[in-house]
Image 1 (cartoon, protein in one colour):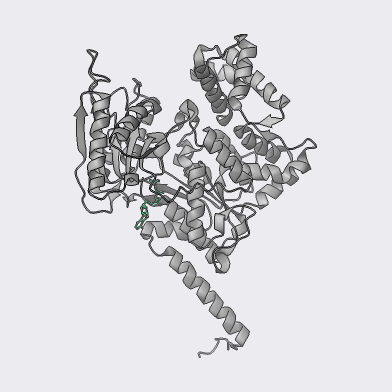
Image 2: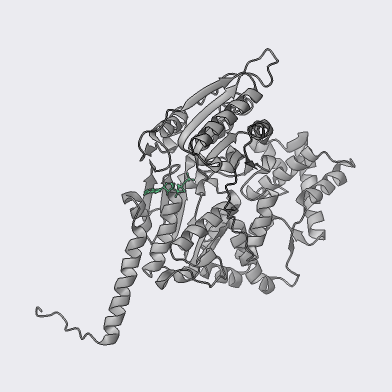
Length: 552
Ligand SMILES: Nc1ncnc2c1ncn2[C@@H]1O[C@H](COP(=O)(O)OP(=O)(O)OP(=O)(O)O)[C@@H](O)[C@H]1O
């Protein structure tokens, strides 16, 4: 021992503490195993703003869940003050499942105290959708800010819209398609923070078209009636949950302080899909003052991929992801993850080629596959839609005969209407299948009825963890939108023609770019093999032949 070094007396208590600390550190290091260098850099930067731009299959969920587990295991973060939000019930369930595997509380749900793990990391963190996190916050402060009973979540949003349309247009039997489009527009206005009073002005200045051929003032009347009908029923809709929490955070300082103090470390997954409303709520959670930054909690990590923004039509935008450093800089870490662990080099090369032709390619990561070479991409042109469906079913049958499980195969479509013919062909081939659809135009992460119900159950602490049955559920037929975040060994990307992908005849602006990103999302769902196809005609008739998609 050199002079100046303190003599340490190793009492049994000190020894036990030392051992516990070392065990904790070992456990924390274990959490980092299996991360590559950049993933590890992201997972070990625990303080300050962090941006992770992660390409498809680059392990963003792996990285953010390990980051949370590592921070809790080292004692740097208090689990009960950790909030991780994402957009869909499915993604939240996936995050909870992965956190549970890493030793964070079972279900990792607010209020859950049942620990599945060990050591410092075994308390509950919250991993939830924006809506369910906000609903719980609303519940927790409601009696302090309001005498009225807690409002019910809307049961039948279409019925409320339908009544509002009838009242304004005086037409008794409302067209379901009009109701669907009006509802989508109401949702869009809310998530875009366009108030009833401002709606007509926004339409005029932003060249925004109201749905169903309505005049802006007429739509605003319907929107107003919708709000009245909802209030008279004592109900709120999904976006009202976020709006109400924003309102409370603005106007009730004590309640706001309580909500804020429950969030020490915030992670926002799929940040490329954040809407202006969600962004506002996030800034309020972090305590941004009127000047945007005063006394702000800067422990925020956002993760996303600008190339996977596919909900622009519903108010999502990668704008905030791309300008994160302007808003939060200086950043503690700004990390790009571009190693694709999911797909073969053949698939990755096609995904890169899809983005390469984009005028926005500077915003997108170029992926590098970590896998060895696989089969080449198959490209097939059929005569009719049904022949395409039969051809795809025959190929899937061949794969299954070679030992592939039906659930390892997926047929991806651009729109719901393409799916039935594939269902018929798979049935004829004797194959079991399940269908994932969008809920139409308003198919944002939480607006289809099943997802809404699950979110509600989840928010109420009931079991809605999204785990599928253990039996092989069969081939998946899914829209590209509904396949986001999923991966399949063998993907059949069908309808790859002009008119279907890109859908319609989009001009050269944002609409076309969104279609390109959809193609990218579709391609990058494939792990081992990818089969792209289209049919020259719908049913063999008609002079006009479809042309191959410009994206391929
Ligand atoms: N460092 C790594 N080493 C080996 N495999 C990895 C690594 N990181 C990720 N993976 C694997 O890559 C696949 C994609 O990872 P993950 O699901 O975490 O990605 P993701 O980025 O959330 O996907 P996406 O955003 O495309 O849906 C998974 O199968 C995962 O196990």
